[in-house]
Amino acid sequence: MSLGLICQIVSPELLNLSSSFFILEEKKMQEKLLQIVSSFNGYLSDYILVFLLIGVGLFYSIKTRFVQVRCFGEGMRKTFSKLSLRGGKEASGMSSFQALATAIAAQVGTGNIVGASGAILTGGPGAIFWMWVIAFFGMATIYSEATLALKTRKVDEDGTVRGGPVYYITKAFKGGFGKFLAGFFAIAAVLALGFMGSMVQSNSIGSTMQTAFGVPKYVMGILLVIICAIIFIGGVSRLASVTEKIVPVMAGIFLMGGLVILAVRIKYIPATFGMIFKYAFQPNAIIGGAVGAALKTAISQGAKRGLFSNEAGMGSTPHAHAQANVADPHDQGVVAMIGVFIDTFVVLTLNALVIISALYTKGGILADGIIPETIGKANLAQTAFGTVMGDSLGSKFVAVCLLFFAFSTILSWNLFGRINMIWMFGKKSSIVYTIIALVFVFLGTVASNDLVWELTDMFNNLMVIPNALALFALSKLVPCVARKIKEKK
Image (cartoon, rainbow, N blue to C red; front, top):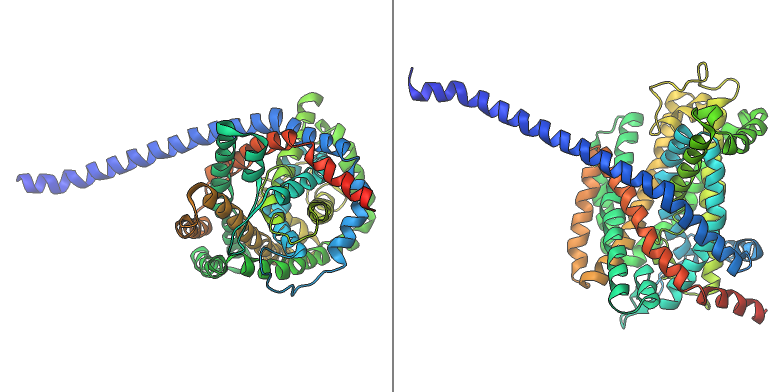
């Protein structure tokens, strides 16, 4: 047998063995890394985020004499009295409503549908109660974030507004330590929001649109990249013009659909609310295990998913509120609170009521109290809406809503990531950043990777730490703003 013939026979086999070996090793490495990141995220949400989020929110609630209650009516008036879907181009920054719409676009994303579903599946109905608690105190937190972002923002000669946590972090902590914390936040924000965050949002779009309408993922990816590129290149003014129109429309469509479901199952609504409050303190009756362990799971799920949903304390939405053209930081602070209220107490709660009533009440989808293996956080909302609308229409309705939610989140998160990229590397880095972000948007639609979701959660969680430290350090500034406005009145 000739040497050439031997090579022809052996080489393909060796190549196949080598290829299989490397694929297997890569898979093992990914699984190992996934376990490490998941464990780290669990530690953060169980032992750090709960105390930081509730701690900062409670601290600012007391310091501002519960601004979320005292100024709630004022916030509603400032938000809706001048509501317009055609706010027009601002000479610099955005109008107050455009800034709020951009913030809500970031807040109302997959966290309201997929996040709420995951919280209920893992922590039981009681997790929603803890999401409410996080959101209530988070309204005071986001008030402080918005006011600080406006007080520390920078306006360039060309009218470009630059503001966000990196600016008030460096004000809170001078010197090298402040730069380190701000840099830590900026890196986490670029990765979590601009890159991997956009990837998980587009992943949800690709998966649901393929399931509901049969649109190939790569086709959805190409369409998303084209539309996103047009908006990204248009800058802040084009983004503001899009979000001020898309946010009210997407919220209205979802609310109407949810109200239809609840109207059909209205007799089960009292029981649904009862389950949320009952299993907030007795979750073991639903999720099993000891009372203490089950309660910790319910609370940690509420904190983790609450953060991903309303983003209060994470430091993302201050980038949007810093763009607002308002007379006083307080004016945007009370508007920012309404963003958390709409996100959690309206949109997320409506989705949760639909899901819980479909799961746990009479005529629901449970069999013998066990959730079928075919139901996960990705398709739970579609299944719940399908109990009334029918499987096909329910799947399509949620897919369309998720398309709006996730798409608007991609737009806002891209802006937030760009602001931090420019803070680190200057304006010239914006082009490179945009190209990389568009690549991640496309990859997200065609690939599904649990590791990317966990990494996004991790960097979201890590953003909280420097942001919360700065909020504590600058606590004297925020109550002064609240008192100053009250004294004027």
